[in-house]
View 1: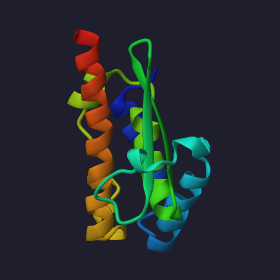
View 2: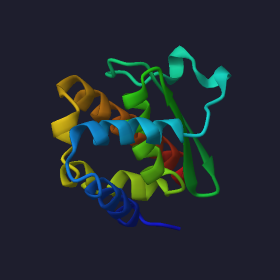
View 3: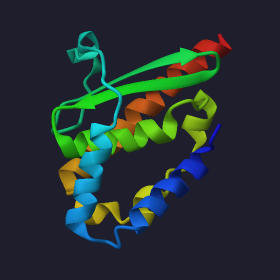
Length: 143
């Protein structure tokens, strides 16, 4: 299984090919969102909406063995692409890894240049929600 850092390094490498071209970068993020596996319609409920996002973002998690698997969707293409990056990084990781992992890819790909403050806040809310799921599963495992 790939580590958080290996996956982040892959993402950084992919984005470096775009050479900082804003239009290409945004297009690529939207393309990544299209590749996100479909979320079940019945999971697109109020309870699964990430609070703090301007767009609608649905996020669920399930524990299989000692690994967490996420499912996500959004009503906007760019936001769906952004959440797909997080799903790619965190999927199949242990709660411990998710809670203690250092997310550094955003700075390395210059994400602040192509997502505004609102999306930035929403992205932080997505990370927070994924870490909350990890904390809940970790607590459950220890009980």
